[in-house]
Amino acid sequence: MNYAVIMAGGAGTRLWPISRERLPKPALRLYSEKSMFQIAVERLFPLFTPQQIIVVAGSAHSTVLAEQVPEIPKENFILEPEGRGTASAIALTAVHLAERDPEAVMAVLTADHFIGNEVVFRGAVAAALTTAKSDYMVTLGIFPEFPSTEYGYIQQGNLIGETDGFRVLEALRFVEKPDQERAAEMVQSGNYAWNSGMFIWKVSVILEEFARQMPELFDQITAIRRTINTPAYAHTLSEIWPKIRKQTIDYGIMEGARRVVVLPVTMQWTDVGNWNSLKALLPEDASGNTVRGDALLMDCSGTLVFGSNKLIAGVGLQDLIVVDTADALLICRSDRVQDVRKIAVRLKASGRLDLI
View 1 (spheres, rainbow, N blue to C red):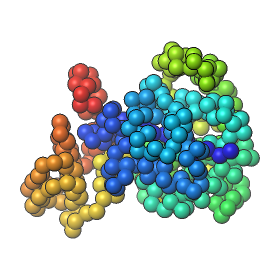
View 2 (cartoon, helix red, strand yellow):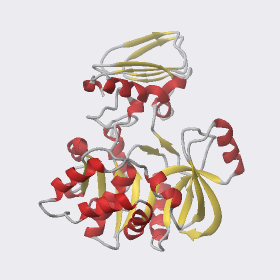
View 3 (tube, rainbow, N blue to C red):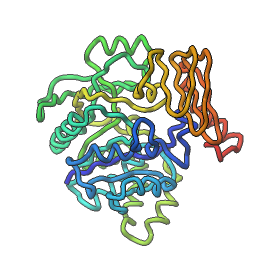
View 4 (spheres, rainbow, N blue to C red):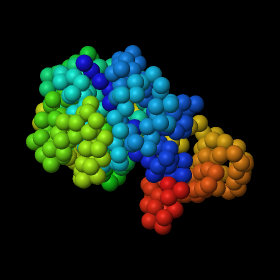
């Protein structure tokens, strides 16, 4: 059977002070009346039923996420005691699915991305599921609309075939976030796609790759697997999980994986990873200002105001990010949004845990 695995963990510190450890980014209503998590679930219908949707989240976030999507069975929530990177989260999910269905195909999807064309998205996932049944490890590559330095890239190779109207290309290598010059070169070449972080594969295939490339993690996850559906599971998970080394699926598996292919897709995709990317999704006035909440702006341009329950007045602001919450106020130049995460780091180091 096919399963959709929604990765819904992470505090999203680049969207501080709205996103906190107690209220993760996917649970927020940022550009819609629904949360990004709710949108991520709903766009999977009718390709998957609620019983086929698996949610991976931190233990601290399970309640708020479950309340937002009551149609997903409680047993479909796989909870991490703490974040140890995407590699371990995917490995844990894979063994759970292997116990449920050894022939399972899993689509690892995100809960914090904007996808404008959901019809194309579902078509691409369906084509990827079909392709994965031939033992390929499939990733969705996004057609790069501009030279971005905020995304990783995938170098595309020869055409392998076509599935349901989508080209299937060799994935030659994964490239980390480049500088502006290199990004421009890659986009101009026409041989690269943005790395969406969405992957589709057989459970058996990904577990073979964990055994080959990350044997220590594979052994740890296998020990946890032996206790699934037994009273010993919670204790075993809590004992082993903190000992797992943090690693991403890109570094740990994808860069050295076999039979990796990419499906290039154009579907109005944005990783809502910082305040600038969110601003791009919201309406602007004639001066390029974006307002959520109650604001009065005079002679301002290129500014985002994200308010709570008080009037925010601005005069002569240019290219600023202003975010107000009940207990914190962020004022940031729009060209420094990547550094917002450092605020959360400094708050944690100083013991101000109530603010992160």
